[in-house]
Length: 209
Image (tube, rainbow, N blue to C red; front, side, top):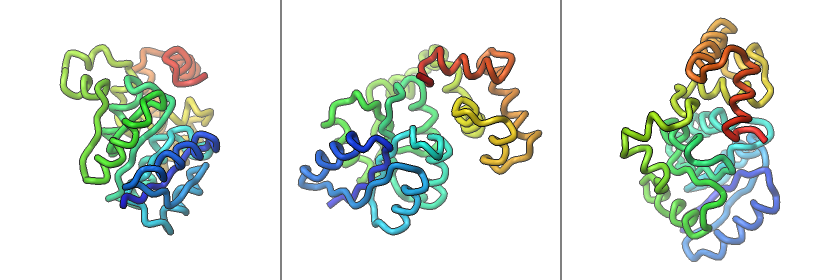
């Protein structure tokens, strides 16, 4: 039996996913959470084999949350299940330690397959992500933010989530000057000149509504 913990702030979606998993003969939901804090607390008490994680939890941004879980539970496979398209964030998240990344438009059968696969110690790559991994020619076609480093991407997500550079520094536990360096590199890689330009970029590529 594979024990699964669900973290998603949409109650109806989470309930539907829980019902889907519990109907599978080899899967069992052992915990649910709607925030990052609840997820970390729940994982500390539940003996989960897999975490299914949404990137839009209200209190902790996606890459930051992934890092917190990996730090607390380094051996726990994480399946990212999110509204963000795979060509925008998947490569970054897999490089940061996610075992699978799926958009919520993917068939439910594929989500189940991914969970079973990562529970066996393997990664699950969708066809979209596999194209980016195996075909070097696609790297240049990927959106610029997918080529940010892990720390740059963390700062990027904090900024588009409404944090200031100073607040991002506190969250990332770095000095203000280090955070400013990350922001400068982000602006350079995205081809923008200000934090406002970073926000407008995020809207343009669909990372913000």
